[in-house]
Amino acid sequence: MAKPVSVRWRGRTPAVQDRTGNMQIRKAVFPVGGLGTRFLPATKALPKEMLPIVDKPLIQYAVEEARAAGIEEFIFVTGRGKTAIEDHFDHSYELEDLLSSRDKDQALAQIRDSVPPAGQVAYTRQQEPLGLGHAVWCARNLIGDEPFAVLLADDLILGEDPCLRQMVEAAGETGGNVVAVMDVPREHTGRYGVLDVGADDGRLAEVRGLVEKPDPAEAPSTLSVIGRYILVPEVFDYLSQMERGAGGEIQLTDAMAKLIGDHPFYGLRFTGTRFDCGDKLGFLKATVAFGLARDDLQEGLGAFLEDLVAGR
Ligand code: G1P
Image (cartoon, rainbow, N blue to C red; front, side, top):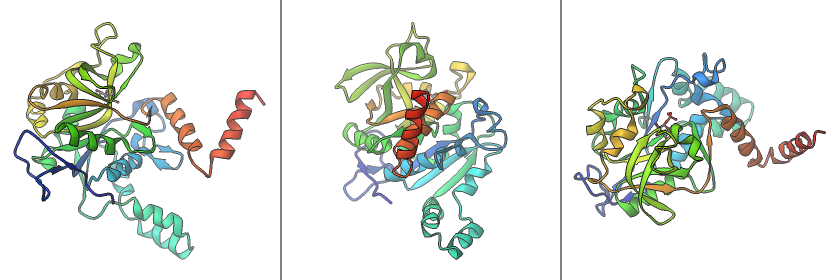
């Protein structure tokens, strides 16, 4: 597993320190309680986070990204009908025995490697669908008093350098909250948390304000939050107020907005291509892009796509 990256934090007295007094981002929250109605009937009995891109479930990509960023504790906020996720991140002795007896060493190593170390994975249930902010709040006692990451598995990012790793590095520079951001077409601002941008060096944009799902005409910019966050634990103080926001839901964006001014807050324009896998077209694009990025599929898939486009 990659080494945790040290981050210097301002704000509350650090609860976790390395020998140099820097804090580490050790914990990540994966909100996986959503119903996935956009992918029915596929998601009737299967959690949407278990839908595969090529041969790996969406949630596994998110967990691997977190591991590459040095995360050591994986906290899933689940809901009804999500036990397949728990089974996925556990040993399957029958399967492992079978693969071992058939000398399928590579497959065996792959499935063993995807299981987090014992005691470093936790599940808690969001008992009511009250929004993303509420889902994150459900993890408050498992996080405690230290900065943490949030990853939304629907947002899948293809790139050389894992997005969360870039963010941990940025948090080390800025000493506070960091969200992944990208420019979206203005007509799409109603799908995102959108930044009111202060100082901006083209990579890091200072967050002066945040609005959840604004109408295009009212959006303060087109720079939008993608589902990766590094947050200070003070965000729980605001989430605890249970204020309803856009869509009548308890929004993470609204609680984050209240941190502005008291804690450094930046948007990071990450490198990599983001796919919205909560959307059918985005999901299909991701399948093609991740397929083309694979050595074992590139040639066959590339040839097929060329023929398809040429109408052969
Ligand atoms: C959530 C957040 C939103 C963010 C988006 C990124 O919205 O509420 O601020 O921009 O994820 O994907 P959702 O997609 O759950 O509606």
